[in-house]
Length: 161
Length: 332
Image (tube, rainbow over all chains, first blue to last red; front, side):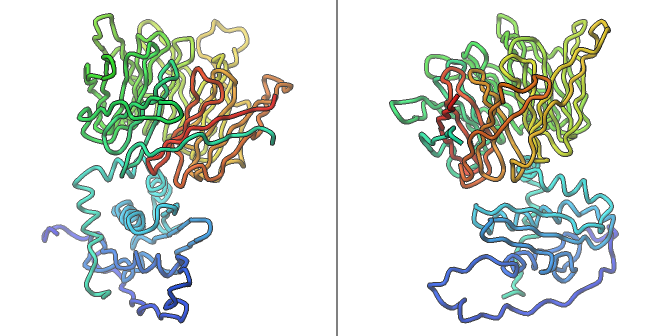
């Protein structure tokens, strides 16, 4: 990160991280198929790094478990994310990192919808439309510079163990 | 529904990558497919199965989005994310790259040949539609650049018999173009969809246009002659909207030139065929769902195409690289 550039949001609110998931008896049982649920999706996206700050999406409250909706039967995943400020210019990049993380981690059968939490961004319709357009997303990811930035956000931290 | 859509064959065309498009050659004997692996594959039927005859690689530096056969069947145009359109010429069983058309500022989304074979249209994320003329020496020249869309232009399609062009876009509109004094102009803007329009197809007579969109509907448009007038700007009206049938974005639509059946490719993994009610008023057409395969593929269906010679033969393409061949039978 360039030292001289001013951060858009120099003093973000930092939220506490949720603890690790508690294992239930069913989780341990090999014969019971684990349906993919909200918590699992949340676990995938909570530690994505914010492009501007050395903090995770969870710590910045950009993603919250309550804003994840999964239907394992219908093969749909919906994630709402909240940019830290309404004019955040990184909103598309944040949405893209979430989408890419899920595309790379989930079985192919899932339809993944990533939206901005309604009312939290000045250009939410524009950003939502871009994220929903798979042709645009595919073409953008062929851009090696953009892909590199996305991959930087997705580098997993040792913190989550 | 007594009408059926039966699966004849499924095969994997572009391993490890997405297959974006598939097109029948004019004779209906070959299929060209293209995809994220930057290659174009030509498939031919061997008995009951389809075999890959040729692989055209090294034509593009990025994904190939669409391919189009010339009306004579001897040329192929490929539109790529690398901002170029490649023209391939058939030589026996192989194809060689004849020329590369440059000019668009970014990803080319579609290429289409006019019925005469002398004109080619391309459209791009740079919002423009380019019209190219080709002469007897296979030389291509851009004759018009039209900037009618305010966003990414997704698809272009020519009228089946006339030199009339239509394009659709991320800006939710469809534009219709005609040549006037050696220049191509947008003659009509069809508004109505509430999200990106992905695909367009003319009916066999060319009097109507069908569009499909991210708003999960299909709209049928008809040209109406404005009363009086010298026939300057034409007006197109939406005469029918098919809603409530598709669960997600409708990526492609195809009107069968032989039977008039309308097929759609949807992001909910399904393939649907609609039939027109023969008794309805032609200005208020009625379409009903004739056949539906809900899980035609395990991922989004990107493309759908009717065989131009064999009635009922339909091919669909999916994000997982699969091509499926179907037989549609309708009880008349």
